[in-house]
Image (cartoon, rainbow, N blue to C red):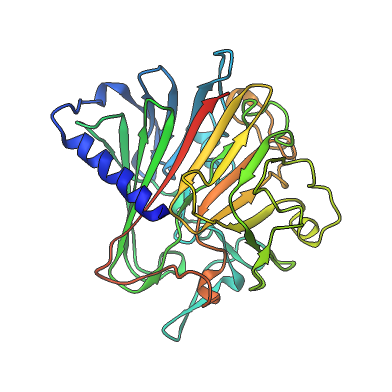
Length: 374
């Protein structure tokens, strides 16, 4: 049902974009030079919707750089992590707002098999490959197209990942289209193809703090996550293969709880992850998969996806050494991530949903971040 709903929304968006009422929204997208990387221009793109709310994107890593939305009193603030300059972006945290790939999350030992052949990928997280390796999609310059004749301001980033880039087989053509609606929704439409059998797992790695980025922790954020089970990990943060029910555990957010309410409990998975850093198996039965509410500001984030998993990360390794927009410091647990996608290390777990793509296939996925107040 969830995939049908997402597909219906996508078809409606296409129909609206192609109808006679479509508008050229290029004037609602400002494109500024942000820097250069390996001789290629990097842009900062500012998208403004009709209510006057703003997001900023960059084609370096296809990143979300800024999300400015009002609180319940109409006061606007940026609620995601990013940097003011391109130099800071390159030198800073690789994951802030990035589209990560080819394989988001971890691959155990940097090794996997496809049809009996072993492939090796760079180790950049203990003994694992994380988020496609050190030179993954977060660090490349994507092609940029500001779309016209669309219902809302939209930007398409595309990238051709060559065969054996970071050890992954096949030439993969990937794109993400960001659309910023008048309902304060960031719609992320992913498309990818390959010329050789390979694995792909794409996500966005934005950090959120609904107080405003750099303003305190997320421990008071009220989380509802419609996932009745999760994938426990070992000491290397690799799934053990167990599918564990959340009922009766500190991982149960099927009903609302603050993030900080149980994060310090003496529970094996909280100890291993130093907090929440785990993949939830989404129920995919309702339109909204995740809701985050911050009572003081009244800001609310809803996440809608057609993907089977959601990685919840609560900033357990933020330590105050990173500074973002305006020099704001990112302290311990001052941000949270909600990464839609497939399960970690899926290529090494045949019973997990497959991340294989074959030549001739076109795979698509949609995830939506919706912001509101109450």
